[in-house]
Length: 132
Image (cartoon, helix red, strand yellow):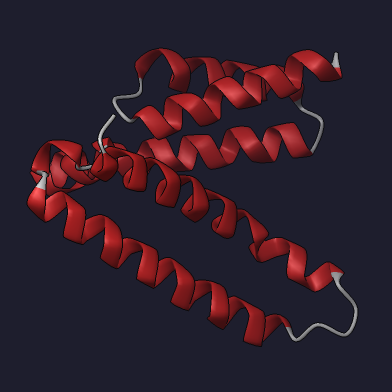
């Protein structure tokens, strides 16, 4: 793995982590949620600028989801539907409907063209396994 790949790997991990913090700000008393979310948004925007700059130099490193989104409308619609399915799986998991969550995560894991979604689905399946 060269430096470009390492940078992208790390900033994509950072992006996923930052994105996950959004709902947590409301749980911290005395913290201005709007200010924090703006700061996270700025940080994510900066991360995407770095990602874009490296991918312009090394197009082969473009994330799977961006390749799909930019192909055509049908690919974008399929990506959007899969994202909704992932959200439905996480919602089912959060509400205790583990059978539905497991079925949705399994479907995504076996059929997704997006590596990040397959990894998220695998993580969901692992969480469900540990809850049972």
